[in-house]
Structure formats: C-alpha cells, structure tokens
Length: 261
Image 1 (cartoon, rainbow, N blue to C red):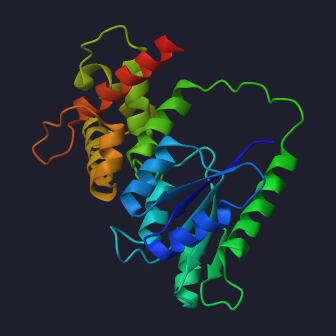
Image 2: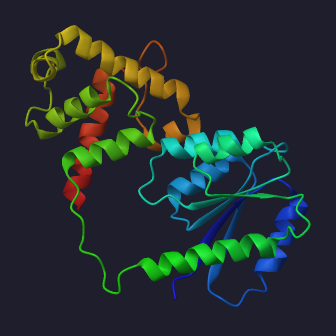
Image 3: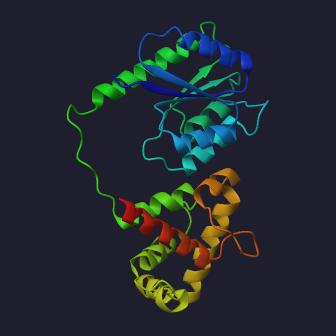
C-alpha cells in the first residue's frame, strides 16, 4: 500500500516530540515531515505532495500563523491539495468558521479531554484509507494539459488569482508570445491590440489591467513563494516585473518545459 505522507506544521517542541514518538510506533506505511513555521511549511507543500497536513493555528514561536498559512496555501492552487486537519488551543467559533472558509477539512481543539497525537493520526488514517479505496484499480489515462492550463498553473502559483480583472489578459498575452515565432514580438503591436479586439477593450486598458494584476500578485504573495516561482531579475521601478518581463518570462519558461517533455 502507498505510504501516507504527512506534514505537521507546529512550533511547540513538546507537541512535535509527542507526534514523533507516537508515529514511530505505527505499523502501517507512513512518513511524517515536520515544519516549525509558515514559510518553511509553504515551501515544503510546494515541493512535495502530502496526503495530510496537520496545522497548528497559533504559530507564536515562529513566523506567520495558521490562518495566514491557509490563505497562502489557497493561492498556490495545488492540483491535489492535502487533507487539512487543524489542531489548536483556540476554541473561538469565529476562528473555527474562518479556518473552514479558508479550506480546513477538520478542526480539533487541543483542550479536548481525549486529545492526543493518536486521535489526530486516527483521523488522518481514516481519510487516507478512504482516499485509497476511491482510487480506480487501473491507472487513469494520462491527462494532456493545454497551453492555457499550463499558463494558469504557473501564474496562479505566484498569486495571479481569479478575482483579478487582468488575469484573462495575462493568460492570453503569455499564450500569444509562447506561440509566436518572433522572439522580439512587440507587446504594443502584436499583443495588446489582439487582446483588446478580442474583448472589445482599448489597448491601454488591457495593458493597465495586466500591470495591475502583476503588482497585486507581488503585494499579496509571500516573498519566498515569489522567489520560488519567478527567478528573473526584476527591473520595474515599483519592485515588480514590467509587463514585458513577466509575460516573456513565463512564455519562455513554458516553451522550455514543452521542449523537455
């Protein structure tokens, strides 16, 4: 059977030790990874596919907090997000409601009489077995991703979200450049007018909406997530990429990945 992959994001040393001690006694296949803070936890989720995420809401001894972690995890738009179990000393109904709205699947109060790592791991195990039982007996067909799918995956990871008016223009601009044989295509001539005509907008409004989406992504997304997903030098005056830098970076990245596939 597939090994259950678990990530514990917790900054309480004793709690981490309790989990390690209990998990070491388990007989079924599993792997427990421990992160002590928000930034490291998000980095791990980006780099590895976990089945279960056990998250403490109050990371007082490290960077960030659990609710902020959930918000940033949402921005990653992971194709297979982990099952999220919240463990917390905070029993506020409002906090619990907010955690659920941000994607928490189950919330356990540490003040429960029967709270223990066993309680949490039993819940994780129940979810994992259900997930395994629901998988088809034969491997599913390989899914082919469209160019638009690939673009959405890349820009969503860096914080260009569906609620941004310019997202569709960003997708179209990157697609036009990625498909073009002209490596020096002029955005003002070969990109903005094409998109503007498609949506019955002016060239200027398309250009501004794209820049606004990029600037907002740089404002709301954690620096480490940006650094992991955008490795080009930023020369924009505001500390964000220019439209050309952003569009060409992802167009070229997608073309390179396509050549390697």
